[in-house]
Picture 1 (tube, helix red, strand yellow):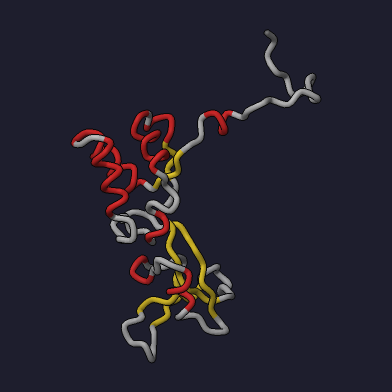
Picture 2 (cartoon, rainbow, N blue to C red):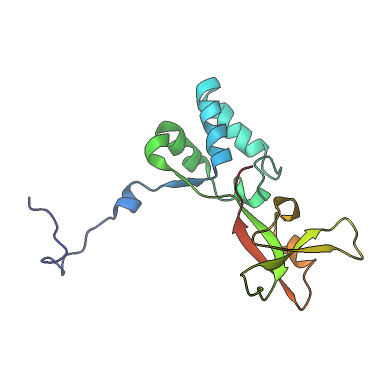
Length: 158
């Protein structure tokens, strides 16, 4: 059987793509670390129970809809069986409030402290402080005004 060549066989369409045959499971690094710990120390049933039990709890630094909302039992089981080829690490994402316009050097004014509800603190920085991160867009939008906007950005491990 000859191999499919897209330059010559443009009228032939493959029945399935590699992604359809072997879909990747998108997880944060924290979720993967927890899955690998469970794989070494428990069984699949206990692991599934953990993910289901902690749905809604911000155990991985993510909003609850990112725990089981995006990871199904089937995804967790496939990742458990073949983690090296199945898991795709995605960055943790958080919401921040910043100015709509940047300064001439590319810095934004970022919401820094919300402890004082009447006078929140804003700081001119290149990137936001993780302490000012929100889990959901709705939480961040409570702190916006006509000069600011809520933006979702990846957060780095400290």
